[in-house]
Amino acid sequence: MNLKEQASPEHNGVGEEWTSRVQRLLQSNQVVVGDQRYTRPAPSVYEHQWLWDSCFQAITYRWFDPEMAAAELLSLLHHQVQEGAEAGMIPHMAYWRGGGESLWRSSHRSIITQPPLVGIAARLVYETTGNRGLLEQVYGPLEEFHAWFERRRDPDGDHLVSIIHPWESGWDASPRWDAPLGLVSPSPEESRQARITLVETLFQHHCRVEALERAGSFSVEALDFNAVRAADLEALSFIAHETGRPAEALAWAEQARLVQQAVQQKLIGSQPTDLAGAEETPLRHESASHFVALFGGCASPEQAEALIARIEALAPAVKYLVPTTPPWDPAFAPQSYWRGNVWISVNWLIYKGLQRYGSCGLAKEVVARSLALVDEHGFWEYFDPLTGKGCGSGLHSWSGLVLDMLKTA
Ligand code: GLC
Image 1: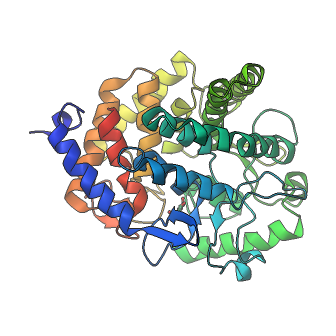
Image 2: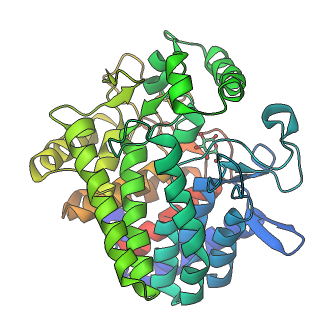
Image 3: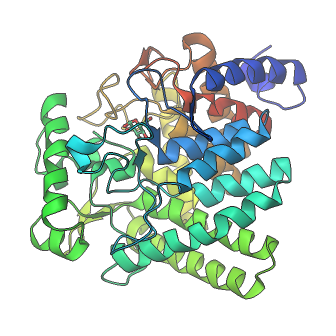
């Protein structure tokens, strides 16, 4: 049986086998602290909790452990900032057993965020499990989270929020961030050091976008981050509707539309880009982040056609889709962290985006190649798109997302 056939949900036998493989993976990564449970991204290297990882984990759990799917999302809200200028922020890392002190001056959490997928994940969990109570529990915290984005991260009021550290993008060492970090072809260590040093700058400027921009520090209106945010606002509108808040549902839908429009006009335009600093300097590095525009419903039909054509152009150039940096880019390094690898988390976003725009054949192709990759090489953190070699940590939880792809393709 070829993998395209396997990707169809009718093949229940195959689905069951994947379900038990993924179930074993996620169970082996579960962490219990008191009455809370979360799933670490991977053993040893990633023992703490990461924001977008837990959202992806919840989306995967919905197929075999509805309770854990909800618990995973609710545990994220535990460290949401409750007071002060950053009230509403959900941190990108929670240190349930402490350990954050040396980097973050707080033992339990970081001071930055990550792509907002909590609403998206809650909606998907609800749609599969019928857990309406979960929607009630996440609604208030999500309102606060999105209000925080507007209040703290969009000082120029253009409906695009800025990220202030590459870690917020989730794409830590991507060549996208070399220029805004002032780096030229950095070694992995130089790139890592720049990220660590930047934390000190964030403290100096109290994470204020305007102050960071004046200081020439990293501040980027990132295309994929804002597209994910648009999708999360749509999910929030759905949640408001389902929980009996029709006026709020309309207001969130309008916000989502404004973000989609801003991404479409300013970040996709005729050539996709991220925008750096108060001057909004285009960062025209070609990467798979552009395809995430589809996930957020941000592309016009013509823009979508062009983005889909770029994915099609990648298909014959690599064995496994979708490399984060294309192989024709001088910065392409297939086994170097975020510099050209395949990440199943990114593939999931692209796959859903292709489905959204009706490009179902290509969506299935992404699923088929993702399944083949994980089947042949295991649940690695990321992969070489040319050979499939697994890189980074093994037994990485978010590679279990292939199950969600299989179930929904
Ligand atoms: C790495 C990735 C980041 C992810 C984390 C845990 O730092 O760059 O996106 O959230 O690992 O998997």
